[in-house]
Amino acid sequence: MEYQHIFLPLRRQGKSIRCITAEIKKHDDTITYYAVRWFIREFDNYSSQKRKEYKPRLYGAQFDQIKSVIEDCYSRDSSTTCKEIANTSMMQKIHISASQIQRYRCNIGFKRTTTKYCYTIREQNKVAREVFAQDMIAKNESFFFDCIFTDECTVQIDYNTRFYFVREGDSFARLRSRAKHPGKVHVWEGISSRGASQIAILSGNTRINSEYYCRYARLVQDNAPPHISAYTRQQLQDWNVEVLKWPAESPDLNPIELVWDTCQKYIIGIKRRLRRVVKRGGGNIMEGRETSSDFEGYNSEEDEQFQR
Image (tube, rainbow, N blue to C red; front, top):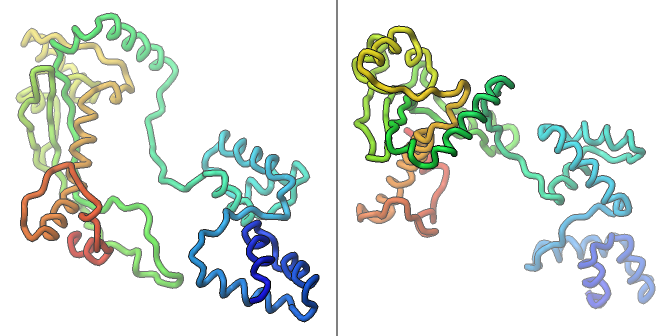
């Protein structure tokens, strides 16, 4: 094309095809809109330069107002849909479609993510949590040296992937088999400033009640039913074990929760470490250190083979 010195700067500025055609027609009346459109398509297919960030021209003058509406909607409710935001914009005399809202949302920096749930804490328990935290801060680090933090966790073998990307019309690519009663174990553990206790693994058919629990546990920390029952309290009193009074609805205050999180990440990473062993021909691997070469050649088919 002879008018690249006109076309390229306008294209980089994000000008429309009609605007570019009008500028070129000032030099050559034979150039048509369709010729410019064809050249743009060919240019975009073979050009290596990065496209400019998409900015809708129709609402350019109202960009700040639309951005404010989107941010206000998500500050009130992070699950607000584009249609609801478009309706809110219409109430402010801004007529914009849901698809345009979706583009603006990406440009502003909002991304889709999975939902992470947390426990709701009642108001009366918030006061107890605050008093407990202030008491522990006043004791500084001394209370850590004479406490054993214990908790239990259920480990279940199952899929943990939330999202799949499939072709339109493919109804089978996202299907995964799931056992009605998947394999799982109940694990009990304790930690202190002197180290970790032995792990107690309870089988799936074991029912945890107060009498059974007290055969193995000499100290409890949270307010699970087997921990605060009358039988457990009586046994702890007979053993002369001092129990730290724990606030209700406060499992997050127990530092052993960090241990469970680390164990969960380790179990999820087993498949990745096996893949690294295969990639290195059975050679030794360094735990916790992964390089970009460990992920080369990874595809979903390999992932399915390891899952099976």
